[in-house]
Length: 149
Image (tube, rainbow, N blue to C red; front, side, top):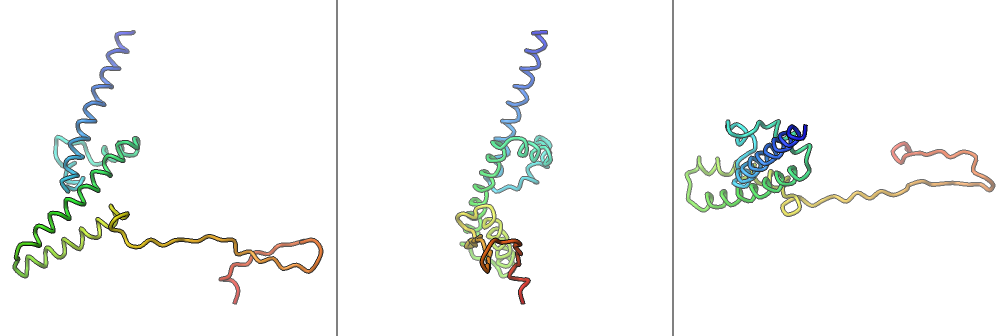
């Protein structure tokens, strides 16, 4: 029985080791700006649903993938800056302008703390007004400002 446990334990460790190696490869590709969907189409990589499952089950994996995506967004910005520095035909400029617009939008979502739009601050406060004419309150009626004409 002890031998079976050791075999099972070593199989689990091997599987976890392979997962970490695969995750490192995925992170490297994401950092290059390659989309996860494209990475997972490679036969040597796990499916997209498998990677998402790993991310759901393990916060450390989720954080690793998201960090790699953020770095990949910077890579895409760098690549576009390089391309825009070179003279282009009108047709090529239209393509790069569209790509730049898309990347800027994506970066504003992935790296919102640096490139995001100004954030709205929502203020929550108690808007209850109590009107009393002496004595104890017998009934309270809550009325939203939207209901008052």
